Image 1 (cartoon, rainbow, N blue to C red):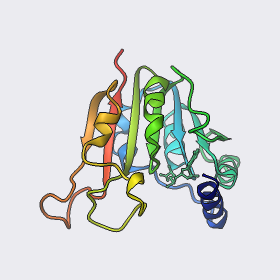
Image 2: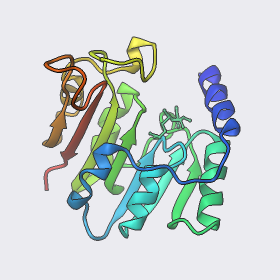
Image 3: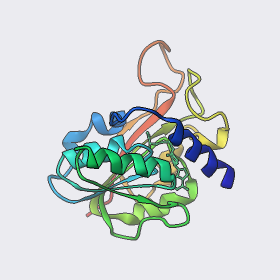
Image 4: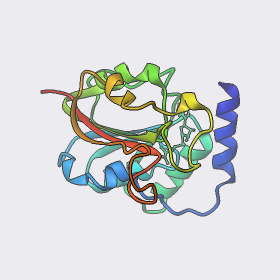
Length: 193
Ligand SMILES: C[S@@+](CC[C@H](N)C(=O)[O-])C[C@H]1O[C@@H](n2cnc3c(N)ncnc32)[C@H](O)[C@@H]1O
């Protein structure tokens, strides 16, 4: 655990440049699903590309990551004129979001299976979970090398039984491998009203 934290601290400390990253594809392609108002969370946000897209949409946006270096960068971007994001240093496994707290949660390139019931519960009725992360049935080399940090086939669906499926894309190694959306799963689910 400490090693992983140190790894990310070091990684974010080494990043140079102040550009705000693009949001993950799961959010960029589905911005039309967002509510006009509400409270949103970018969980394990890194440099918070998703949070900035949520804030630009008009949502009250929170961004949590356990890396002080990443959160300092996010705060610096806000001070430099990026959309208002409330960034906090927070271990999201030790301190998951409270129940009924958010209308939108985005998780990109982070996986902790024990957190899934907490994510379902943290959504308000009608709330949306946007999720994108790496799968084991990959084509390329991107993403974590340890298989436990990758999702198995359709695993995310089984991990989120309380949510209604809205969008799902997982292409595995089917068909023309030079095309399509590969190496990752893309998911949007909704907590029933
Ligand atoms: C691969 S990065 C993804 C960052 C961002 N979501 C993105 O897609 O660009 C994984 C992030 O998870 C954060 N992280 C890992 N474990 C965490 C934990 N227990 N609590 C909070 N953040 C964590 C790391 O600091 C890192 O910023």
